[in-house]
Picture 1 (cartoon, rainbow, N blue to C red):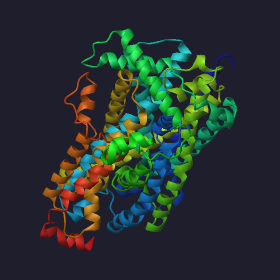
Picture 2 (cartoon, rainbow, N blue to C red):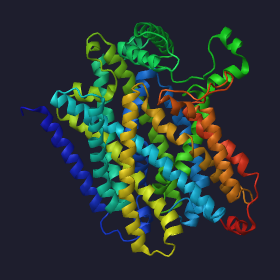
Picture 3 (cartoon, rainbow, N blue to C red):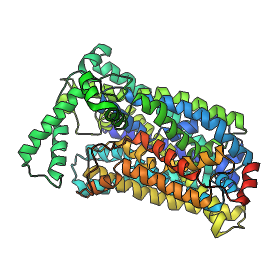
Picture 4 (cartoon, one colour):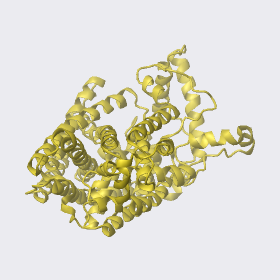
Length: 584
């Protein structure tokens, strides 16, 4: 075959054809909203487990987690998996049982039975907005591969505007393919295609790990190489551009490059000292500096460090309780199992299956760093998107197509579930709850399918917007974008759900709305969100006081939950809702 890319194209075409065929076949004949949303609650637990994994292992994980391993040269990101297991046990025995007892289709129907319609609508709206932003921002990730592949095949080097147009086409294509089988097949199509996509993802992950391991020369090379302190030119150039963009900058390009070089050298040395670490307390290691910081200074440092033992055992628990207990996207697939026992089994076992996934993808990132810093490969080191470039430039034809299909599988698996959950929540909570309260099954199905199409367009637009942010700010890492987007609001959701689950007479609709707003404001301020938004436009709104911690994304949901819960329990449940709470 003269053009090796043709073989890759055939592999990817076969993958798309198979996914659409399985989705439409498994979802054929869907006539009821219960079937569309929860698969008539008769899907095997092992298929549910695979679907949970598919939703968790998005394209952001496929490319973003290696990015964490590449940037940090250690495994501290994997610490967060510990908290996810603890949280899944809590969700399995506190949340899932209540949802099955009430036989909810939208999990926010529980909040209506406990507090009233206003809390349900507010929570559902928070989910719709946040899930759209989180899932849409993920969609630019698999498009990276399509854009880079086009550039390699055609040997073109487009400018920023042309690249953005490529992203528009790539994101639109992936969303369209996914929307076809999701719209007509419902949750059954989602779950069964997820099963195939998880198997493909595991195969791609294992192949990449094994080939990189052999390419770098084994563990001895890895241990020695990660402790070196190179100053990468591409990182220096990106940092120099950031310095020049600062509003108060008065440095020349040459001076900015010198300052950037100094900063990158210091960071490289610090990264080398923690290379291959699995644990990090976040507390200052040097005794002299630790004493100088004092108690609050060390607490501040812990909260400003992404991956620590504290974030693993505390923050990560809150994150997973929110994503797996209050997010329609994740919980909906758990409700497709025949009973509570099998739903719990699929949820808890998925947490155990997450550990090797997080470990392997992080290790891929570490291996990529070593690979591109060995003398034999350093000249081919790209400026970014290291895993995508490795797939396209280093892997053989055919295998390259399978790896690309693995990436698309993770993207389409998480996107299909998001589309189905968004459509279900909108149809049950807003269409049936407000627009057409007496709508029959046929009307609900029509609304669900039309809303799936509308949300597909919306998520594609958000994906393109994220691509624009990444193009204009190439130093931004993917994982904080994906996880950080729901960190601002899911603490508010979790706080209200915990009030509803753990109390019988606390919390009211008015108090809940106030509590959710308070949780969002506190998290936005503590995470420096206003300045982060202003930074995209080249400015800053204020200077945070030096004693105030700027919390990293794993802590956002924890703080939001605590504030929301504390405010909400100050209000007593309306008398009309107390009997409903007692029955729930």
